[in-house]
Image (cartoon, rainbow, N blue to C red; front, side, top):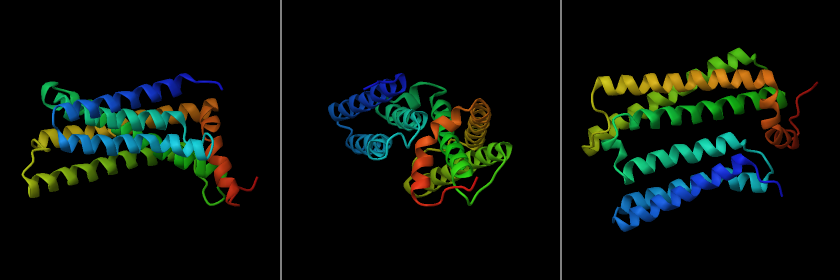
Length: 208
């Protein structure tokens, strides 16, 4: 069986997640142990899906899901959120890349393989940016609600909130540009072949 570089990276990141869970156990961080286990389960979903339906989830999404969750759990367990000045910025950027990547892959696959959607790639790119911004706004509302009702301090003022939304937008723009380039090079088509087969198996194949 051929082992790709992407697969190796994916499993290394998952191994690091296990290490973070063990660190949380040693430090008596019960909530982080629970959170880490949930995160590990979420990391395994792309692997399980690809095992059930071969190559349905592109490797980039698998890696980004694991990386985004790893950065978040790692920031809590190691206190990097409080020690490193721009750690939160990195976490937001990675998460926005993940959201935008999922959005672009989903829209492209539906456009290419499903008969119910037809969309220009530049409209796809615009949609992806809007999606990243919308999820970012939703996240900020959730942080605001948590601060209001639990007394936490997730939002540290207007400057912090606006900075997070800016990073979310930049992440969406970066992934939109990457997505357009991948479509033009034909690599997006290759990455979504597994999704295409799944869509076509439902009898919703796009008419030529």
